Length: 401
Image (cartoon, rainbow, N blue to C red; front, top):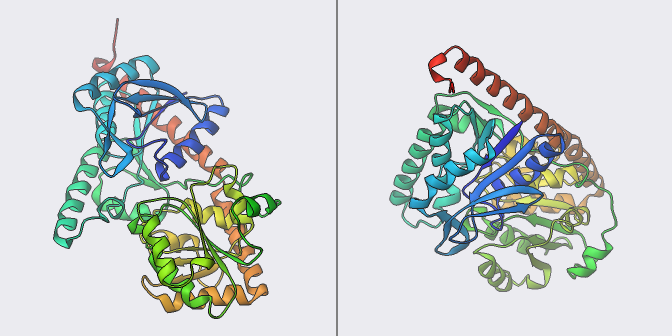
């Protein structure tokens, strides 16, 4: 089957959409499917390059102010390029990842060609409105974006989301079927086993218990709360916070760590390559996440697959992954006291940490990425069969030459 993924953000902008496609697409290709991606190019020109061994068709684009790795397509070149790609690749199924410019153009062109189209929603307005200062403007912008989302996704054959929480969020906004399909975790890469010596030495991580965060350092991730909690927790227990990732708040967070007097207890690694990432989980004792805008959280799944207890805010889909006092702790947004208590409990009790870690490991197997691949294969086959039967029942839709 020829499968075309569509995303308005892609490598080198590293976000949840990219990590979803870059894991799912090669596994589908390994099973014999022909897979390609449409995304913004890295220049003002069209492109075709291999990324993760997948053909990526680039739409001419320009950089977004303040986010140079995020690009938007040049409008007057967009539809022509999309039509050319569809004619060249001849997809049998289209899988969009958002409702922005490229996806809308592909939906418009694909529907005219009778290609079945499904979509996966990774979108929460909080990820795009976190820099808006005034609540009134933020609400108005959110309403506009959700309206655009509904207009695009209501044209699809089926919509998937990474979790049931995410499905409940968008079902009231759509007239099409919405089903949860986990983004999946590769249990071959993320597991409790492996020598962490090299990564400790490379990133100057001392031989101390480690509290870990992995992800973007942007406003909606609320890493300030984690730093406040750590500043209090280190007075009661010996630990280091390791922060893996980059983002527009990185410098401000480094300055806050200095102000709180914990700069010597916090290591900001910046971006780390994929081959190093699993070892950060392996060397850690606990994972923490304060973001209230998570439709699943791949990094939390990676931590669970490595056998780590998780301290998470009780928001978004994190409550589906973390069972309070079973494989970690859930706390209410902004409750620093609860964060500190959770950190102290896990770092002061080896038996509790081990028991919670084993439960995390158990729960992670429900999200095995090979189960995700099988789910999407069934969806693709079903939607393609439905479209073929529909067109067969409508002879006027067939292109007879």
